[in-house]
Image (cartoon, rainbow, N blue to C red):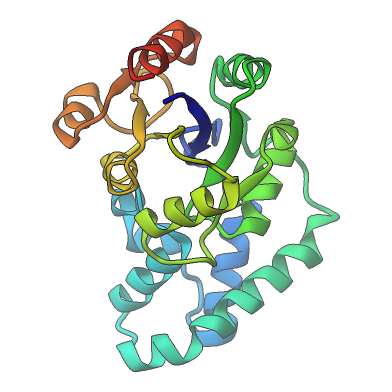
Length: 240
């Protein structure tokens, strides 16, 4: 039983903002759509969710933000698709004038992806980002070519289902196995729900959580740096 398919979360697993204060194009699109669809003016949506967003999906984040702003559940459900349509339209309209540099790859991640590719491991995304936002982030840091399939925020609101959808699209054939990389305990739980190995990147390597919380969640391996890629392949060999 070999590991032939690997899925990655995106934010703080593959890429991160170089500064926590960066007001990205996606953030601008979200704030614009909140005003356009819900008449919520001068909203910085991050102020209404904070660190709770880690491990959440685009859709679940928007639902929480709107609920925290006092919007009734029925109105949220009725207008959520309009919100995302407006968000994506604004994003595309302003992309031409957009300047790259809002995201950078985590240290060592490209080397790990090169090693996986050389060993014939197929890589995909399993992210709560809508696919358009995910592709933009990967394009901006030069990582798009490594990923051939994915599960995305428009596919489902639950992270475990997004991982499952990515696996379905990967062509994984039993008894071969998959492994999921992430930066939150939610990623570890999603991997377990899909009978996958799990690798976490800790706060030391660019993630948001420390090793004890990951191991408590059941992680098979916690990395402080992708430069420790030999530990990944040792895990794969041990579970073959």
